[in-house]
Image 1 (tube, rainbow, N blue to C red):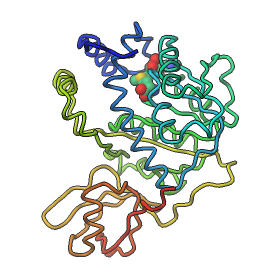
Image 2: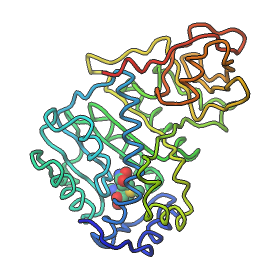
Image 3: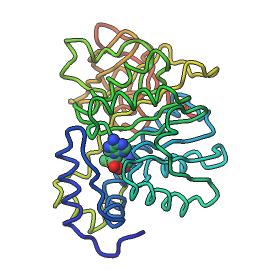
Image 4: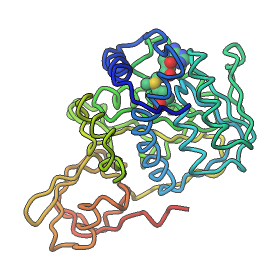
Length: 335
Ligand SMILES: C[S@@+](CC[C@H](N)C(=O)[O-])C[C@H]1O[C@@H](n2cnc3c(N)ncnc32)[C@H](O)[C@@H]1O
């Protein structure tokens, strides 16, 4: 279902629901039109975050190794749509959707079948959602809508999957909620991205509580040339240029082939620019570090980090007293 005329009241109501969400929200989708409006704007932004997160995972060498996909809390189905756009449908036998809104499940199924008529799409029976053999579990923008118990149940379910790909907003709160999920799943999973090691997350240390693991996706140019998007940004008070997200991609420890990122570092957030140098917040197996990178020390590296086009995975080849002297982007790891 597409929308001919935008109903801004619908979008404002949905936005209020999202902003007010503090766990245990009820079902707020009232009609297919709600979902079509969501799909046109909010989900489009989420889709750009998925594109960025999927690229980052692929840059880390991550591969799809499951034949079944479950999209939990699917909403309009954007996570699955972006996932299938990246990986195609040949490597999957089945897509399963789950949302406590039947309207959402049906909308998502139609949207997926419209774009990928060849893939089998079903709506889960909640009583059969207890074990996810050979399944990749996609989860997107749900954590702040769940009660503590619902989060724990979702963790348990995700723990039975073979692979988990989870994208949340890039706010301090959402990123920290996602971090809790990561820690709860570490016993059974290898984190593949954005983490470069399987140790406990250094963000948990008292010194690091003000920080959070997040990245920025790019809004495509078309959005800046479209009157509806301009109106959306104005009414919703959303800055289209800023698209922060958090994500975690994990493979079950039982999987034979898991990428190894020894010696790599992840650049978090946005590097801060100063005259002739940048400051880079870097995460690696030794924890979090705030490094300085002088343009004159390694100009290609400085440019790569400044432009942010090469992803966020790097190898620092020479570090001296908090100063990166040289390094490389790991973008070539992308399969
Ligand atoms: C903000 S929307 C995100 C939808 C979609 N995952 C996306 O990224 O666009 C949150 C979704 O989670 C669903 N949801 C919230 N609580 C849920 C629960 N306890 N069980 C299943 N779905 C839930 C809502 O119905 C809604 O579709």
